Image (cartoon, rainbow, N blue to C red; front, side):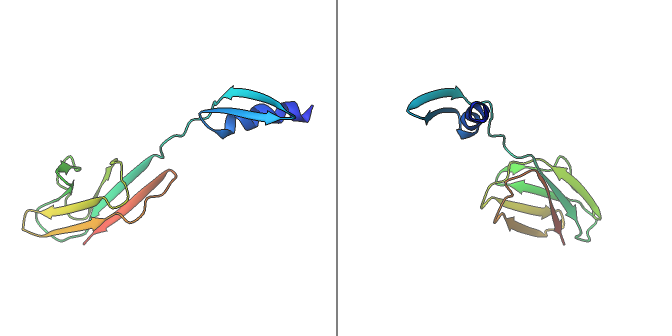
Length: 115
């Protein structure tokens, strides 16, 4: 009785489709579990004292919808990967960059304070 309940569970956990051999019999079962990409948000806060706001780019992609004013934050939803480079630009000529060294494998809100 317990074995009958365990077999479908094991088949579902293995992957896209699974074949499981128990006591010489092969059981096939499509997986009901799917790998979901983690939901990650990036909260960028501007702590750089300047009259003009700060823009954030990844390569040629503009990530901010509008410049982030001093003492303000903006929540972004970029798909970050290892070694992505974020560039920060303020109209007064100040610039900086940040390279992503690791990304969590679960849902998370990442916070980056630029000063």
